[in-house]
Image (spheres, rainbow, N blue to C red):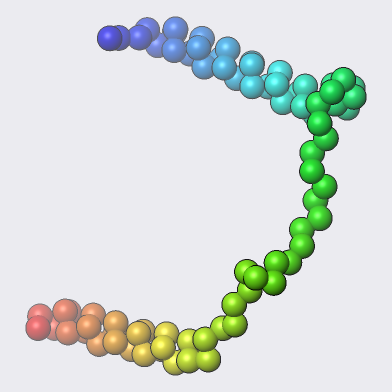
Length: 80
């Protein structure tokens, strides 16, 4: 199936118009007064269950991995 490029452009333009008009409705305070619910309040809070203590050996492990990868890269470059 082939679609004419002009038809495709018209479809895109109509889509953008619908999207823009919908965003304007959502941003209009008068429309919100007609029954659209307000956006939730922006009050983030910390969740203690989602916190983790950092691993005490993380830095050493990363340095060791970096050293190993540099050794491997040099071996590959040397053709071993």
